Image (tube, rainbow, N blue to C red):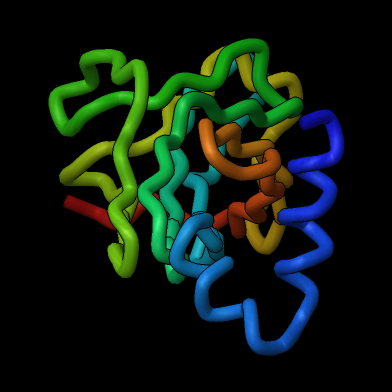
Length: 141
């Protein structure tokens, strides 16, 4: 039984097996990431990104870490902490200002226009993925 995971991995490399393998895993893509600019270090900012699951299995976002910040949290639209966020097969989940999003606290450096912040996204069924948040000005309300 120790070789069963290896046998499954090798079987998934065969062209005929690809559809069956794709239906049993999640395939995640991170896109369109943005983060609000900051005027100085130590401030708080918010980040947003789209997560698309093109695989056949659900997955769950369980954490985000942006190394520029002392703290990075996943929150709902009201700012309450979220422990996780489910992503169904074929679903696009958008982290947005009016929905779930990322809060970065204790930012170590000023976030400047056209800057790009790498953040690590942790999922239950996939490897950790790196998403890039492009720095933009907060829209005027």
